[in-house]
Length: 140
Image (cartoon, rainbow, N blue to C red; front, top):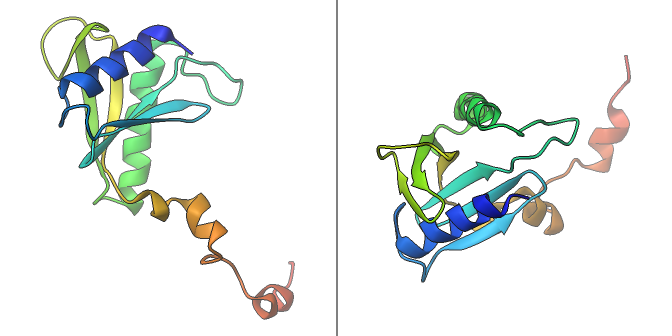
């Protein structure tokens, strides 16, 4: 993972350049992204990786897939997916939607409670089909 991306996100979090100061900011890492939680909003940054099944290796690809994610997910959750932001400046002095060079893009979403994540809901047994529903289904 790019140390420049991590530096950029940590600086955004500490400076409050996106929403709030570092006191409430938190970073969650997945295999393909870093998500900055600010308390009110979440910003998903694609990691500059090529894993075969996904290729975010260039800035152009990351911008493209941010727009694709927004387009797809807005259809199902328009209240959550707000837009794509342009991060400008440098990793040590980034700004949101400012002037200057663009080192990164992010998907801006409304932050929701972490206990609403699919993994947490599944762990509580709140999603699933009953056995009778599963056993009564016929395979064409």
